[in-house]
Length: 94
Image 1 (spheres, rainbow, N blue to C red):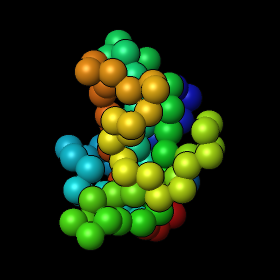
Image 2 (cartoon, helix red, strand yellow):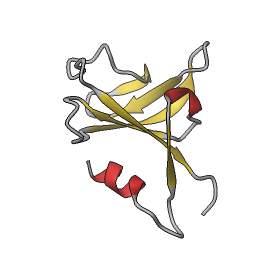
Image 3 (cartoon, rainbow, N blue to C red):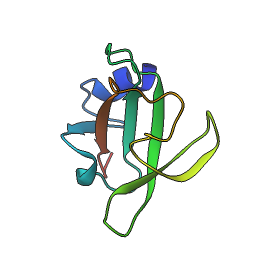
């Protein structure tokens, strides 16, 4: 959850992020944070590294090495019907 707290924080300089509503609003280098149990305790983070033919994000992660995995992780043993996502667009400038 530390990355989610950091990206949610307000700051005038350094790495800044904006929460967006959906995965289709993300760009390369943006971050998706996952709450598997839906209790607002975020346990997993990924980085957008590519897009599929429909323009949806593909992500990389390292808990279980993942490269260009579909962003929703519904094929993961950790995914549940209660899974929540938080989508962060990383600011381009410092």
